[in-house]
Amino acid sequence: MVGGTLNHLGIRPRDPSGIFSIGLAPFLHGDGNHLFGNTLPFIILGWLVLLQGITQFYIVTIIVAIASGLGVWLFGKPDSIHLGASGVVFGYLGFLLLYGYFKRDTTTSVISLFVGIFYSQSLLGILPAQKGISWEGHLFGLLGGFLAAAWLPALERLVPVG
Image (cartoon, rainbow, N blue to C red; front, side):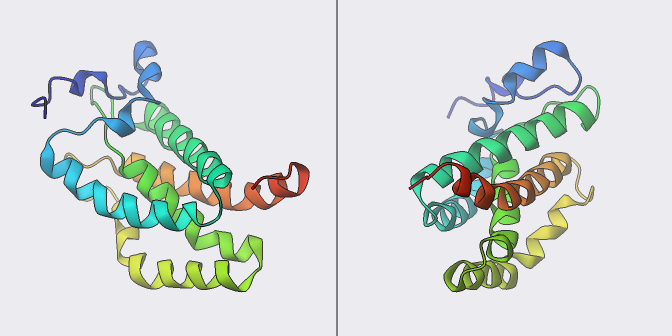
């Protein structure tokens, strides 16, 4: 790893130059433990999103990354730096929780139920409970996932994706 030397490239709330880090921040992590903590949920939830199709995966990832990053930039604590993939992870969680409702097919509904059962405890991560954890990134990622779940079926009807 690079020992945190890239941390300054994270999102700096309401700093005009910090808005450009929205696309970069999910790839930066404070240390190995931070990266490791995001890796398994990213792989599992990302794979479940990918089951919907590669185009859907890209659309969902872009929506949740922008929602999480923009939410942090607008509402994050001043004089802080936010980085890591957990906003995207929470976005995948939000998407998977609601997509079964909006898609209305059995397989997707079962995935939503599975995710709800096994990841419901993770929803506590949207609360400002622990210093140094970007609960704002978690919250806005989750909301971005909800938006992606609501929008994706409509997008699929307008433009055939596969």
